Length: 470
Image 1 (tube, one colour):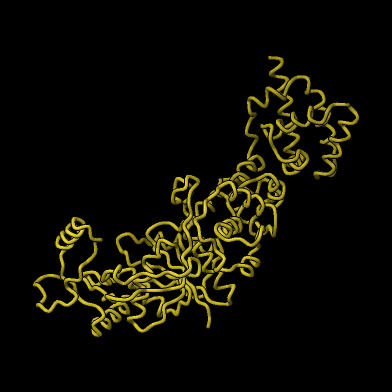
Image 2 (tube, rainbow, N blue to C red):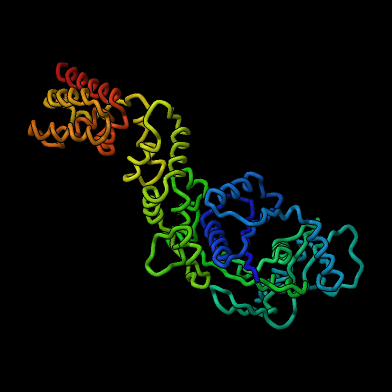
């Protein structure tokens, strides 16, 4: 049997962290077993579903590299099929029209609450023989079995048993004929031959209802694996205030897809003490049955740590391309400055995100930004003017403008003059970048280029002398 999994988000909002983890586990389970991964868009909520959300979901999946083998399929394009199956259930007395008004249902619930009974539909229309009331469009309800229990072995949670007496006759079609969630997912999973459904544990209560519909249709229900929820640091369900933003926002914040996937993989699953997983290792090692039973806590610092790791390891081609796109989007003219790859390789050892890297790299593609006042007053004093000028003159005569020769000149200058390295290096750094923080000085000078570096040193010398003379 070929393993077939699916990811079926509703396009009523962004693709968030919890959804991405579900998609990742589904994708990995299919890949690990040589199976197929299906993409499905559950867009039957016409009031809340938007094309913008659909586009964001698909773009997020593509950015993460969670490619699908089939789809995307859209439920709104399958309405004739749902109508066909509903009619089949009606014909075989496995579903029935319900004419109860909202007011009648609300009164029913209030009476049940007052009597200490669990509120649920009392099936008053299940065996109705009276003529339909005029002008009322009924809902269609599924005839849930009245006796017995639904039993299934959840791959993560183990054996689950739900009495059918706990389940009411759920609505499978609204008055306008549009099908409901619990019905459409059954038809879709049946038609698409889904063998394994991996989803959040907030769907556990839906599963016995869906299994009963599968049974009524004479179809084999898939295996189910309900993944525990993700919590914020305060122990509450993950929300926007914890960082549960759209996956595309993580991209815009400078996170790499490799880091986000690695982080989500470890959020509820482990393989010994291993923390870093290549994509190949994820596929080879992932075992759905070893997913943790308990909820996981989102840790933003751990995600940042992983992002730092991936920024400076592995093939740089895609990362450099993304970095270049972000530099250009920041309004920087990349034709007037160093090669983007050179800047990336210099900055990658110190950056937590690509956004931070872009911010620190502006100095290489813009005119001199001016001095940070505090840094300038601390390091650009009259006492450094003479050695700074002497060092500038040596660099100006340097025929080979690369980091190593630049460093050799500085090293020789410090040895000959007896000036401590920090006493001259920090003034140079402030002179060429405007601040007291930058990548290694020799690499910073190399990236700026000889002409631009000399101009900035000369500017700093003029500033020092004008300030002291003034």
